[in-house]
Length: 111
Image (tube, rainbow, N blue to C red; front, side, top):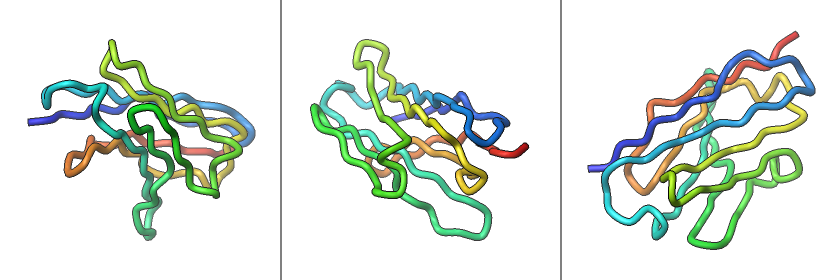
């Protein structure tokens, strides 16, 4: 059983930054997992943002110049640093590993 808990969301002004965190429990050796971030805005499909494999990162082209995924295997955590946030980044952000999802953390970008 894997549990993923996201945190770090909030209200931020356009142009601001946030760092989201996701801490995992259960499921064995964390360093062997590929971890992903997704988001879902109201009325829209869930959108993949970034993946951190064992050593390699991948990004959706729509965010690759502004978002950075990182991980700390000792803390069983994965992070998403988001810069130059825009109103269209407003969404519920989810951490994912395989079939497991966190509950999401809300990011709202508004002045």
